[in-house]
Length: 444
Image (cartoon, rainbow, N blue to C red; front, top):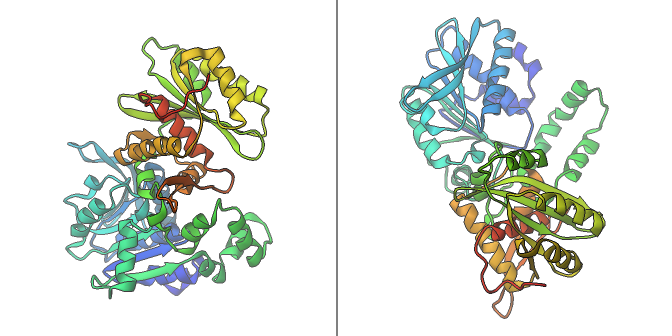
Protein backbone atom coordinates (compact mmCIF):
# COMPACT_ATOMS: atom_id res chain seq x y z
CA UNK A 1 0.00 0.00 0.00
CA UNK A 2 1.53 3.29 -1.09
CA UNK A 3 1.36 6.60 0.79
CA UNK A 4 -0.89 8.02 -1.90
CA UNK A 5 -3.48 5.40 -1.00
CA UNK A 6 -3.74 6.65 2.59
CA UNK A 7 -6.38 9.16 1.54
CA UNK A 8 -8.85 6.32 0.89
CA UNK A 9 -8.58 4.60 4.27
CA UNK A 10 -8.77 5.21 7.99
CA UNK A 11 -5.89 4.00 10.14
CA UNK A 12 -7.50 0.71 11.20
CA UNK A 13 -8.20 -0.12 7.55
CA UNK A 14 -4.65 0.78 6.55
CA UNK A 15 -3.23 -1.32 9.41
CA UNK A 16 -5.13 -4.33 8.11
CA UNK A 17 -4.12 -3.72 4.49
CA UNK A 18 -0.43 -3.45 5.39
CA UNK A 19 -0.50 -6.60 7.53
CA UNK A 20 1.48 -9.30 5.69
CA UNK A 21 1.01 -12.03 8.29
CA UNK A 22 0.32 -15.60 7.19
CA UNK A 23 -2.83 -15.78 9.34
CA UNK A 24 -4.94 -12.66 9.95
CA UNK A 25 -8.17 -12.43 11.92
CA UNK A 26 -10.33 -9.33 12.37
CA UNK A 27 -13.13 -8.96 14.93
CA UNK A 28 -15.05 -5.82 14.11
CA UNK A 29 -18.10 -3.68 14.60
CA UNK A 30 -20.76 -3.65 11.92
CA UNK A 31 -20.44 -1.49 8.79
CA UNK A 32 -17.01 0.03 9.42
CA UNK A 33 -15.59 -0.56 5.94
CA UNK A 34 -13.53 -3.74 6.36
CA UNK A 35 -14.95 -5.43 3.25
CA UNK A 36 -14.11 -2.22 1.40
CA UNK A 37 -10.51 -2.45 2.62
CA UNK A 38 -10.34 -6.22 2.05
CA UNK A 39 -11.40 -5.82 -1.58
CA UNK A 40 -8.57 -3.30 -2.08
CA UNK A 41 -6.09 -5.73 -0.56
CA UNK A 42 -7.45 -8.56 -2.73
CA UNK A 43 -6.86 -6.50 -5.87
CA UNK A 44 -3.31 -5.75 -4.74
CA UNK A 45 -2.66 -9.44 -4.03
CA UNK A 46 -3.94 -10.68 -7.40
CA UNK A 47 -3.47 -7.75 -9.76
CA UNK A 48 0.11 -6.60 -9.15
CA UNK A 49 2.76 -7.46 -11.77
CA UNK A 50 4.70 -9.62 -9.34
CA UNK A 51 1.59 -11.43 -7.98
CA UNK A 52 1.63 -15.21 -8.29
CA UNK A 53 -1.50 -16.50 -6.56
CA UNK A 54 -5.25 -16.21 -7.08
CA UNK A 55 -7.53 -14.83 -4.35
CA UNK A 56 -10.55 -16.80 -3.12
CA UNK A 57 -13.20 -14.81 -1.24
CA UNK A 58 -15.91 -16.68 0.66
CA UNK A 59 -18.91 -14.47 1.46
CA UNK A 60 -21.88 -15.38 3.62
CA UNK A 61 -24.34 -15.28 0.69
CA UNK A 62 -24.67 -14.57 -3.02
CA UNK A 63 -25.52 -10.88 -2.55
CA UNK A 64 -22.37 -10.22 -0.52
CA UNK A 65 -20.23 -12.14 -3.02
CA UNK A 66 -21.45 -9.89 -5.83
CA UNK A 67 -20.91 -6.77 -3.72
CA UNK A 68 -17.33 -7.77 -2.93
CA UNK A 69 -16.53 -8.26 -6.62
CA UNK A 70 -18.06 -4.88 -7.40
CA UNK A 71 -15.67 -3.28 -4.89
CA UNK A 72 -12.78 -5.15 -6.53
CA UNK A 73 -13.71 -3.82 -9.98
CA UNK A 74 -13.72 -0.27 -8.64
CA UNK A 75 -10.31 -0.67 -7.03
CA UNK A 76 -8.88 -2.19 -10.22
CA UNK A 77 -9.89 0.99 -12.05
CA UNK A 78 -8.46 3.24 -9.32
CA UNK A 79 -5.16 1.33 -9.37
CA UNK A 80 -5.19 1.18 -13.18
CA UNK A 81 -4.92 -2.61 -13.22
CA UNK A 82 -6.27 -4.09 -16.46
CA UNK A 83 -9.06 -6.47 -15.42
CA UNK A 84 -12.02 -8.22 -17.01
CA UNK A 85 -15.24 -9.20 -15.26
CA UNK A 86 -15.88 -12.76 -16.44
CA UNK A 87 -19.30 -12.87 -14.75
CA UNK A 88 -20.50 -16.18 -13.28
CA UNK A 89 -17.98 -18.94 -14.03
CA UNK A 90 -18.60 -22.65 -13.43
CA UNK A 91 -15.73 -23.81 -11.23
CA UNK A 92 -17.05 -27.28 -10.32
CA UNK A 93 -19.29 -28.97 -12.89
CA UNK A 94 -19.91 -32.04 -10.72
CA UNK A 95 -21.41 -29.95 -7.90
CA UNK A 96 -22.68 -27.08 -10.09
CA UNK A 97 -20.69 -24.45 -8.18
CA UNK A 98 -20.15 -21.05 -9.76
CA UNK A 99 -18.08 -18.01 -8.79
CA UNK A 100 -18.06 -14.33 -9.71
CA UNK A 101 -14.66 -13.86 -11.32
CA UNK A 102 -12.44 -10.83 -11.99
CA UNK A 103 -9.44 -11.71 -14.20
CA UNK A 104 -6.32 -9.52 -14.38
CA UNK A 105 -3.87 -9.00 -17.25
CA UNK A 106 -1.32 -11.20 -15.41
CA UNK A 107 -3.71 -14.16 -15.72
CA UNK A 108 -4.60 -14.30 -12.02
CA UNK A 109 -8.15 -14.02 -10.73
CA UNK A 110 -10.26 -13.01 -7.77
CA UNK A 111 -12.99 -15.60 -7.23
CA UNK A 112 -15.97 -14.49 -5.11
CA UNK A 113 -18.21 -17.33 -3.99
CA UNK A 114 -20.94 -17.84 -1.41
CA UNK A 115 -20.49 -19.95 1.71
CA UNK A 116 -20.29 -23.45 0.13
CA UNK A 117 -17.03 -24.96 1.47
CA UNK A 118 -16.82 -27.29 -1.55
CA UNK A 119 -16.08 -24.27 -3.76
CA UNK A 120 -12.44 -24.04 -2.64
CA UNK A 121 -11.60 -27.72 -2.17
CA UNK A 122 -8.44 -28.48 -4.15
CA UNK A 123 -7.73 -24.83 -4.96
CA UNK A 124 -4.63 -22.79 -4.05
CA UNK A 125 -4.00 -19.11 -3.37
CA UNK A 126 -4.96 -16.48 -0.83
CA UNK A 127 -8.25 -16.93 1.08
CA UNK A 128 -10.54 -14.30 2.61
CA UNK A 129 -13.42 -15.58 4.76
CA UNK A 130 -15.79 -12.62 5.09
CA UNK A 131 -18.34 -12.50 7.96
CA UNK A 132 -17.05 -15.90 9.02
CA UNK A 133 -19.16 -16.16 12.19
CA UNK A 134 -22.33 -15.98 10.08
CA UNK A 135 -21.41 -19.03 7.99
CA UNK A 136 -23.39 -22.14 8.87
CA UNK A 137 -20.49 -24.61 8.63
CA UNK A 138 -17.57 -22.67 10.12
CA UNK A 139 -15.45 -25.64 11.19
CA UNK A 140 -15.75 -27.32 7.81
CA UNK A 141 -15.10 -24.05 6.00
CA UNK A 142 -11.92 -23.45 7.97
CA UNK A 143 -10.82 -27.07 7.42
CA UNK A 144 -10.99 -26.72 3.63
CA UNK A 145 -9.64 -23.12 3.55
CA UNK A 146 -6.41 -23.83 5.42
CA UNK A 147 -4.88 -26.20 2.80
CA UNK A 148 -5.61 -23.66 0.04
CA UNK A 149 -2.81 -21.40 1.37
CA UNK A 150 -0.28 -24.23 1.59
CA UNK A 151 1.91 -22.86 -1.24
CA UNK A 152 2.50 -19.37 0.08
CA UNK A 153 -0.97 -17.91 0.37
CA UNK A 154 -2.47 -16.02 3.29
CA UNK A 155 -5.67 -16.72 5.22
CA UNK A 156 -7.78 -13.78 6.42
CA UNK A 157 -10.87 -14.16 8.60
CA UNK A 158 -13.09 -11.08 9.02
CA UNK A 159 -16.30 -11.02 11.06
CA UNK A 160 -18.55 -9.52 13.65
CA UNK A 161 -19.39 -11.92 16.46
CA UNK A 162 -22.42 -14.20 16.44
CA UNK A 163 -22.43 -15.68 19.91
CA UNK A 164 -19.68 -17.01 22.15
CA UNK A 165 -19.76 -20.61 20.90
CA UNK A 166 -18.82 -20.06 17.26
CA UNK A 167 -15.53 -21.24 15.77
CA UNK A 168 -14.72 -17.56 15.22
CA UNK A 169 -15.13 -16.78 18.94
CA UNK A 170 -13.13 -19.91 19.78
CA UNK A 171 -10.17 -18.68 17.71
CA UNK A 172 -10.35 -15.24 19.34
CA UNK A 173 -10.32 -16.85 22.81
CA UNK A 174 -7.29 -18.97 21.86
CA UNK A 175 -5.45 -15.80 20.87
CA UNK A 176 -6.39 -13.74 23.92
CA UNK A 177 -6.47 -16.38 26.64
CA UNK A 178 -4.35 -19.37 25.54
CA UNK A 179 -1.17 -17.88 24.14
CA UNK A 180 -2.08 -17.71 20.42
CA UNK A 181 -0.27 -20.96 19.56
CA UNK A 182 -1.46 -20.81 15.94
CA UNK A 183 0.19 -17.43 15.46
CA UNK A 184 -2.72 -15.26 14.35
CA UNK A 185 -2.33 -11.54 13.73
CA UNK A 186 -5.39 -10.12 15.51
CA UNK A 187 -7.13 -6.83 14.69
CA UNK A 188 -9.91 -5.79 17.10
CA UNK A 189 -11.95 -2.87 15.77
CA UNK A 190 -15.05 -1.91 17.81
CA UNK A 191 -17.23 0.94 16.60
CA UNK A 192 -15.62 3.29 19.11
CA UNK A 193 -12.24 2.85 17.38
CA UNK A 194 -13.81 3.56 14.01
CA UNK A 195 -15.37 6.74 15.39
CA UNK A 196 -12.08 7.89 16.94
CA UNK A 197 -10.37 7.45 13.57
CA UNK A 198 -12.90 9.37 11.50
CA UNK A 199 -15.74 7.18 10.28
CA UNK A 200 -18.40 9.75 11.24
CA UNK A 201 -16.70 12.41 9.16
CA UNK A 202 -16.53 9.97 6.22
CA UNK A 203 -20.26 9.26 6.57
CA UNK A 204 -21.09 12.96 6.86
CA UNK A 205 -19.11 13.64 3.67
CA UNK A 206 -21.00 10.90 1.82
CA UNK A 207 -24.47 11.85 3.11
CA UNK A 208 -24.18 15.63 3.42
CA UNK A 209 -24.98 15.54 7.14
CA UNK A 210 -23.12 17.33 9.94
CA UNK A 211 -23.65 14.91 12.82
CA UNK A 212 -21.15 15.01 15.67
CA UNK A 213 -19.27 11.89 16.72
CA UNK A 214 -21.08 11.81 20.05
CA UNK A 215 -24.53 12.20 18.47
CA UNK A 216 -23.84 9.58 15.81
CA UNK A 217 -22.58 7.04 18.34
CA UNK A 218 -25.55 7.69 20.63
CA UNK A 219 -27.95 7.21 17.74
CA UNK A 220 -26.39 3.88 16.75
CA UNK A 221 -26.79 2.67 20.33
CA UNK A 222 -30.37 3.89 20.60
CA UNK A 223 -31.36 2.16 17.36
CA UNK A 224 -30.23 -1.28 18.61
CA UNK A 225 -32.97 -3.64 19.73
CA UNK A 226 -31.22 -4.46 23.00
CA UNK A 227 -27.92 -4.27 24.87
CA UNK A 228 -26.82 -7.65 23.54
CA UNK A 229 -27.12 -6.44 19.96
CA UNK A 230 -25.13 -3.27 20.73
CA UNK A 231 -22.31 -5.13 22.49
CA UNK A 232 -22.04 -7.89 19.91
CA UNK A 233 -22.72 -6.12 16.61
CA UNK A 234 -20.76 -2.96 17.40
CA UNK A 235 -18.45 -3.50 20.36
CA UNK A 236 -16.78 -6.87 19.56
CA UNK A 237 -18.26 -8.52 22.68
CA UNK A 238 -19.86 -11.89 21.79
CA UNK A 239 -23.21 -12.74 23.30
CA UNK A 240 -23.19 -15.22 26.15
CA UNK A 241 -24.69 -18.42 24.76
CA UNK A 242 -24.84 -20.13 28.15
CA UNK A 243 -28.08 -18.37 29.08
CA UNK A 244 -29.66 -18.47 25.62
CA UNK A 245 -32.46 -20.93 25.03
CA UNK A 246 -31.96 -20.69 21.25
CA UNK A 247 -28.39 -19.97 20.14
CA UNK A 248 -27.18 -17.91 17.20
CA UNK A 249 -25.89 -21.08 15.57
CA UNK A 250 -29.38 -22.59 15.67
CA UNK A 251 -30.91 -19.43 14.23
CA UNK A 252 -28.33 -19.18 11.43
CA UNK A 253 -29.09 -22.78 10.47
CA UNK A 254 -32.75 -21.90 9.87
CA UNK A 255 -32.43 -18.51 8.19
CA UNK A 256 -33.22 -18.64 4.49
CA UNK A 257 -34.11 -15.53 2.50
CA UNK A 258 -35.82 -17.62 -0.18
CA UNK A 259 -38.83 -17.88 2.14
CA UNK A 260 -41.45 -15.38 0.85
CA UNK A 261 -43.37 -13.50 3.53
CA UNK A 262 -46.60 -12.00 2.28
CA UNK A 263 -50.31 -12.64 2.04
CA UNK A 264 -50.28 -12.50 -1.78
CA UNK A 265 -48.13 -15.63 -1.86
CA UNK A 266 -50.66 -17.47 0.29
CA UNK A 267 -53.57 -16.43 -1.92
CA UNK A 268 -51.72 -17.56 -5.06
CA UNK A 269 -50.85 -20.87 -3.43
CA UNK A 270 -54.49 -21.43 -2.49
CA UNK A 271 -55.39 -21.64 -6.18
CA UNK A 272 -53.14 -24.64 -6.72
CA UNK A 273 -54.76 -28.05 -6.70
CA UNK A 274 -52.09 -29.57 -4.46
CA UNK A 275 -51.28 -26.72 -2.06
CA UNK A 276 -49.23 -27.53 1.02
CA UNK A 277 -50.99 -27.21 4.40
CA UNK A 278 -50.71 -24.00 6.42
CA UNK A 279 -50.55 -23.71 10.20
CA UNK A 280 -51.14 -20.52 12.20
CA UNK A 281 -49.92 -19.32 15.57
CA UNK A 282 -51.58 -16.22 17.07
CA UNK A 283 -50.06 -14.52 20.11
CA UNK A 284 -52.66 -12.00 21.26
CA UNK A 285 -52.14 -8.55 22.80
CA UNK A 286 -54.16 -5.35 22.88
CA UNK A 287 -52.09 -2.31 23.86
CA UNK A 288 -48.46 -2.55 25.03
CA UNK A 289 -47.30 -5.81 23.46
CA UNK A 290 -47.46 -7.03 19.88
CA UNK A 291 -50.18 -9.25 18.50
CA UNK A 292 -48.48 -11.59 16.06
CA UNK A 293 -49.94 -14.03 13.55
CA UNK A 294 -47.29 -16.45 12.30
CA UNK A 295 -48.14 -18.51 9.20
CA UNK A 296 -46.12 -21.65 8.46
CA UNK A 297 -46.30 -23.78 5.32
CA UNK A 298 -45.35 -27.40 5.92
CA UNK A 299 -43.28 -28.80 3.05
CA UNK A 300 -42.35 -32.38 3.84
CA UNK A 301 -41.14 -32.21 7.44
CA UNK A 302 -39.96 -28.58 7.22
CA UNK A 303 -42.01 -25.55 8.35
CA UNK A 304 -41.48 -22.48 6.16
CA UNK A 305 -42.56 -19.10 7.49
CA UNK A 306 -44.69 -17.65 4.69
CA UNK A 307 -46.17 -14.62 6.42
CA UNK A 308 -45.91 -12.85 9.76
CA UNK A 309 -48.41 -10.14 10.62
CA UNK A 310 -47.49 -7.86 13.53
CA UNK A 311 -50.14 -5.64 15.08
CA UNK A 312 -49.71 -3.09 17.86
CA UNK A 313 -52.61 -1.21 19.42
CA UNK A 314 -55.17 -2.80 17.09
CA UNK A 315 -58.71 -3.34 18.40
CA UNK A 316 -59.94 -6.91 18.85
CA UNK A 317 -62.35 -6.33 15.97
CA UNK A 318 -59.44 -5.42 13.70
CA UNK A 319 -57.46 -8.44 14.87
CA UNK A 320 -60.44 -10.74 14.28
CA UNK A 321 -60.73 -9.34 10.75
CA UNK A 322 -57.07 -10.10 10.04
CA UNK A 323 -57.40 -13.61 11.46
CA UNK A 324 -60.45 -14.13 9.25
CA UNK A 325 -58.45 -13.32 6.12
CA UNK A 326 -56.03 -16.12 6.94
CA UNK A 327 -58.66 -18.61 8.06
CA UNK A 328 -60.48 -18.11 4.74
CA UNK A 329 -57.55 -19.74 2.95
CA UNK A 330 -58.55 -23.35 2.20
CA UNK A 331 -55.09 -24.75 2.94
CA UNK A 332 -55.17 -23.60 6.59
CA UNK A 333 -55.45 -26.81 8.58
CA UNK A 334 -55.15 -25.58 12.14
CA UNK A 335 -54.62 -22.44 14.19
CA UNK A 336 -53.45 -22.22 17.79
CA UNK A 337 -54.44 -19.00 19.60
CA UNK A 338 -53.16 -17.57 22.86
CA UNK A 339 -56.27 -17.54 25.08
CA UNK A 340 -54.56 -16.05 28.12
CA UNK A 341 -56.10 -12.98 29.77
CA UNK A 342 -57.26 -10.49 27.14
CA UNK A 343 -56.99 -13.10 24.40
CA UNK A 344 -59.66 -15.33 25.92
CA UNK A 345 -62.67 -13.66 24.26
CA UNK A 346 -60.96 -13.46 20.88
CA UNK A 347 -60.00 -17.13 21.12
CA UNK A 348 -63.53 -18.17 22.16
CA UNK A 349 -65.00 -16.28 19.21
CA UNK A 350 -62.54 -17.98 16.84
CA UNK A 351 -63.38 -21.44 18.18
CA UNK A 352 -67.09 -20.70 17.77
CA UNK A 353 -66.62 -19.40 14.21
CA UNK A 354 -64.03 -21.83 12.83
CA UNK A 355 -64.72 -24.92 14.90
CA UNK A 356 -62.12 -27.66 15.26
CA UNK A 357 -59.60 -25.85 13.06
CA UNK A 358 -58.87 -23.54 16.02
CA UNK A 359 -57.30 -24.55 19.31
CA UNK A 360 -57.37 -21.98 22.12
CA UNK A 361 -54.43 -22.28 24.48
CA UNK A 362 -54.09 -20.84 27.97
CA UNK A 363 -50.47 -20.07 28.77
CA UNK A 364 -49.11 -21.50 32.02
CA UNK A 365 -45.64 -22.63 33.05
CA UNK A 366 -46.10 -26.24 31.86
CA UNK A 367 -47.84 -25.11 28.65
CA UNK A 368 -45.02 -22.69 27.82
CA UNK A 369 -42.54 -25.50 28.43
CA UNK A 370 -44.40 -27.76 26.01
CA UNK A 371 -44.49 -25.02 23.38
CA UNK A 372 -40.91 -23.79 23.80
CA UNK A 373 -38.96 -27.05 23.71
CA UNK A 374 -40.36 -28.24 20.34
CA UNK A 375 -39.46 -24.85 18.87
CA UNK A 376 -35.88 -25.28 20.05
CA UNK A 377 -35.81 -28.87 18.81
CA UNK A 378 -36.98 -27.69 15.38
CA UNK A 379 -34.05 -25.24 15.34
CA UNK A 380 -31.63 -27.99 16.33
CA UNK A 381 -32.98 -30.29 13.63
CA UNK A 382 -33.26 -27.44 11.10
CA UNK A 383 -36.87 -28.23 10.31
CA UNK A 384 -37.72 -24.49 10.29
CA UNK A 385 -37.02 -21.88 7.62
CA UNK A 386 -37.53 -18.13 7.88
CA UNK A 387 -36.00 -15.01 6.36
CA UNK A 388 -33.29 -13.08 8.17
CA UNK A 389 -35.01 -10.55 10.41
CA UNK A 390 -33.31 -8.76 13.29
CA UNK A 391 -36.55 -8.35 15.26
CA UNK A 392 -37.40 -12.04 14.99
CA UNK A 393 -33.81 -12.88 15.89
CA UNK A 394 -34.05 -10.64 18.98
CA UNK A 395 -37.25 -12.35 20.13
CA UNK A 396 -35.82 -15.84 19.59
CA UNK A 397 -32.70 -14.85 21.50
CA UNK A 398 -34.65 -12.98 24.17
CA UNK A 399 -36.30 -16.05 25.69
CA UNK A 400 -34.43 -17.41 28.70
CA UNK A 401 -35.09 -20.71 30.48
CA UNK A 402 -34.95 -20.23 34.24
CA UNK A 403 -35.23 -22.65 37.12
CA UNK A 404 -37.19 -21.48 40.15
CA UNK A 405 -36.18 -22.10 43.76
CA UNK A 406 -38.63 -25.01 43.87
CA UNK A 407 -37.00 -26.62 40.83
CA UNK A 408 -39.68 -25.71 38.29
CA UNK A 409 -38.84 -24.41 34.81
CA UNK A 410 -40.14 -21.06 33.66
CA UNK A 411 -39.62 -19.11 30.45
CA UNK A 412 -39.19 -15.35 30.53
CA UNK A 413 -37.74 -12.70 28.31
CA UNK A 414 -38.28 -9.59 26.26
CA UNK A 415 -36.71 -7.71 23.38
CA UNK A 416 -36.74 -3.99 22.62
CA UNK A 417 -40.26 -3.91 21.17
CA UNK A 418 -42.02 -6.99 22.54
CA UNK A 419 -42.16 -9.66 25.23
CA UNK A 420 -40.79 -12.13 22.67
CA UNK A 421 -44.24 -12.26 21.06
CA UNK A 422 -42.75 -13.44 17.75
CA UNK A 423 -41.21 -16.41 19.59
CA UNK A 424 -44.53 -17.47 21.07
CA UNK A 425 -46.46 -16.98 17.81
CA UNK A 426 -43.99 -19.25 16.03
CA UNK A 427 -44.14 -21.79 18.86
CA UNK A 428 -47.95 -21.80 18.60
CA UNK A 429 -47.79 -22.25 14.81
CA UNK A 430 -45.40 -25.14 15.19
CA UNK A 431 -47.69 -26.73 17.76
CA UNK A 432 -50.59 -26.29 15.35
CA UNK A 433 -48.66 -28.37 12.83
CA UNK A 434 -48.02 -31.20 15.25
CA UNK A 435 -50.28 -33.60 17.08
CA UNK A 436 -51.73 -32.06 20.26
CA UNK A 437 -50.93 -33.57 23.63
CA UNK A 438 -52.93 -33.74 26.81
CA UNK A 439 -51.17 -30.90 28.63
CA UNK A 440 -52.61 -28.08 26.52
CA UNK A 441 -55.71 -26.48 28.06
CA UNK A 442 -58.55 -26.24 25.54
CA UNK A 443 -61.09 -23.43 25.79
CA UNK A 444 -64.65 -23.57 24.47
